[in-house]
Length: 309
Length: 288
Image 1 (tube, rainbow over the protein chains, first blue to last red):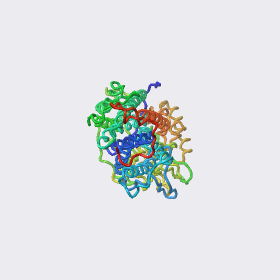
Image 2 (image 1 turned 90 degrees about the vertical axis):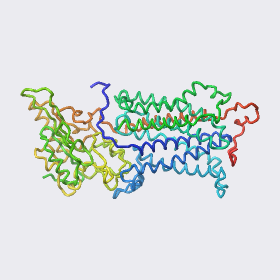
Image 3 (image 1 turned 90 degrees about the horizontal axis):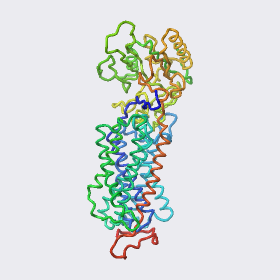
Image 4 (image 1 turned 45 degrees about the vertical axis):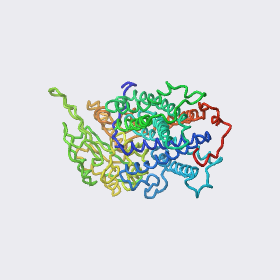
């Protein structure tokens, strides 16, 4: 036995497959969209307000399938509430186990859901869609605090899923500490691309396309860095080949293709990030680029989920 | 007859050196616990059970050491046989991650999945390092050995131990079992069987296993992680969250940098002055 001996894994697979993949995908996009919307809001630029509202709308819509996917994945879906309420005879009460990311995640998702819903209503009010609530406005110091707390929750929801996988004894998942960061960075890059795509359907939001393009580039670099760290951490455990071997390599190639526009943009269009101005044409970007980035977000999660099982 | 008293720790001592692979333990377990079992799957060995799962709470593993070439006399260790079972770990990975509180430690110090509390999330399956737990798809819950919790409550020893014809499976109070196991290892070493060793009888593996083993080879040969690899899933909480936290900080800083309002490269200077001078918290009602 040497120090370089691979990790011993004799564990069974939990069979977390398509529903969980869908949840991880939408949770990343919802949390990421909420974070970007909140960053726009915190910046406080009137010209970016339409983009912020698009972000909050996207965060809410992307959140909708999440609880459905999680519940139908359970062996006993009608007992989904057992996640929050312990029904052990004689020991009934609220369930929250700090050491179990699934338990923490359930509560985070619940609270985040409330924030995403309030932000949705607030955006509808600001857009004049709910005239009977027009006097209600999420503003002032309370509004800023609300946005900051929601932003933190959005970051958590987008990233904790990677930690959930790592807190196991599965090969690949438990051999790295980078999955939480990797999922978060991927969710951020995907959300920037998603919002960039959605801006074209929102009048007056075109001014935010430049900043979003730059954000997508930076998040792509962050994701690439975490992908490299993820791969390196698997080497000592001897599970690199399991994660990156055929056929999963094909999914990783799609994930890398999703990073290509952002990284290529950063390399070739550096002027876009200089203080002189954002030289990004607003409506000339093709639909293919956001589509490719989102496909990469999905492929990355699929590669991580399926290769280990 | 073992005197079974709530509040005392009980477990199994499974001595693989005397296991003959009869599978009486598997049958007794299925009969008592009303487990229908899976359809037999015949491979290239005598093991048609395959693995511990929702239907097999005892599994007699047949570990094939038969050499490819014909051997002469004196090479009698062609098979390692082990009646595998839930280890009822002191530091139980499944219990650590279970989000519903369905997995509890009973008054007999065993690890028990409450079937009416479990909701089938399968987090315990991802955590168990011994491939013990599996989902019962018909009932929609995770299942494993209960140490015959219902029998213990009635003062009866577990069905597998009761049925084992060679006493390979012994049930009793943990302190007595450990004493017995140490004596057995000493006896085997005295009989020129130096490969005999205990697994899980001390705290080196998951704080001690309430179902521990006497093995005739390295633990890895039986698909049991050695002490160095017997790690809890919770070890990755800190690193995982810190990695995500670092990424979150970079994501926010990167976002604040990227999403800052820049001077638009417009031909005229008119609409470009939306700098830091105007921080109107009240945005327009309608998009411009």
